[in-house]
Image (cartoon, rainbow, N blue to C red; front, top):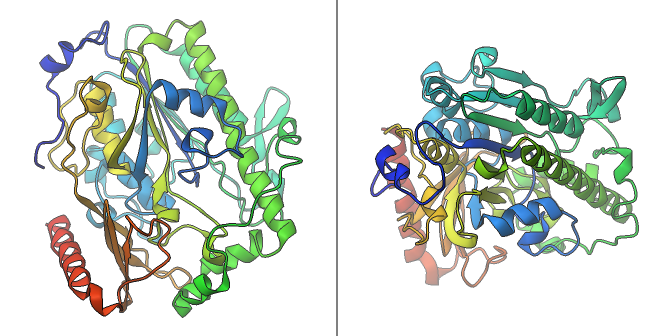
Length: 458
C-alpha cells in the first residue's frame, strides 16, 4: 500500500497530544449525513446556508476541500466506509444480498469493539447485514419509512410523549450515549443521519422540525449551474430517461418546486447542524470535549438541478464530492487540505486514532498525519470511481479521477466515454473524449483505469 500513514502505537504515544496513550485513548464520534453535497455548508463558501456548528468544526479542525466517495450511492459507499475498501472489492450494493462476513470481521466497528472501545451506532446503517445487533455494544438501526407517503416517513420516532423528526431523535440518542458511556473505557460512536435525503415517496420530498420553518423563508435561490438545455441533451438516452431525470421532475422541474426543494434541503442540513451543537455541548458538560475526536462527512454528493438532473449515481463531481472534517481537540493544526481524500480513508483513520494496526487488506489511507504540524504526502495520484449496481433505471458506470483529469464510461455502453480537463474545466462542461487533440490523453486515462481496476480485483 506504499507509504501509508500508519503510525505505530509507540509513535502515537510520543505525539504531543495531551494524555494520549493506550490506557487513555480518545473518544471518537463519526457523523455521517445522507446526500449532503460538498458545498452544502458555509465553510465551503456557501453564503446561502446556515451551518454555524459545521463551520466551527471545520475552522477548529482539518477541512478537506477535495473529499470524494468512490461509489456515489448509499449502500456501496457505506460498505466502503465500514471496510476501507472499494465497491469492486467488497462487492456490496443494492440487490447483492448481505455483505460478506469476511468484510464485517475486518470492519472498523468489529475491530474497535474487539480492542476495548465501547461502541455505539444510531441511525441509518444502510447495509444489508442481519448481524447488526451484535456489531456494536449499543446500536439502533432505523431510516425513513417508505410505507408512509408523507411526513410520517421522517416523523415516527418518539421522545417521551413527542413524535420527533429522525434528526432530533438521533441527536438525543447521541446525547444519552455520551451521558451513559462507561468511564473506564473510551467510546466510539457512529451517528448516521437520514437527512437531508429526500423522502422519495412523498410529494413534498423534504421534511424538517417546525422550529426551522422560518429559516430560508425569504431566501431566493439562483438557478443551478449548467441548467441550459444543451447540458441535458449531451447525456446519453439512458441518462436522459433514467432515474436522475425522474427525480428532477419530482423536485426541480418548476421554479416553485426548485425554491421549495432548496429550502427544504437546506433546512434539513441546518437541523443536523443544530444537533451537532447540542452534542458538543453535552461533551463539554460531561468533561469529555478535550479528548473526543469528531469526524464528519456525507455518504455521497447530490445534484441540485445541474444538467437538469437530480439524485447522485453518476461519475460527475456533483455525485462524488462530499464534505469531510476531522476535529481533534488535542491537535493545534487547524487547516484546509487540498489532497484528494476518500470515504475508504475513514476506517484507517479511525483505527489509527485508536492506536490500532490497520489491516493490510484495506485500500484507504489514514489521515491522522494532517493533525500533526507538518502535512504528510498521501502519495495518492488518482482513485477509481464506480457505480456497479446493474439496474434498469440507473446506468452503471466506472472511471478514474486524478487531481487534474476525469475519465469515465458506462459499463453497458463502453463506447460512450467522457474525458474532462478539471484544471481548466472544473464544472465538467466540455467532454474531450471525441476531440482528436486529446486522443492520447483518453488512451492514457483509459489504460490507467483498467490497470488499477485489475489490481482491485486481485
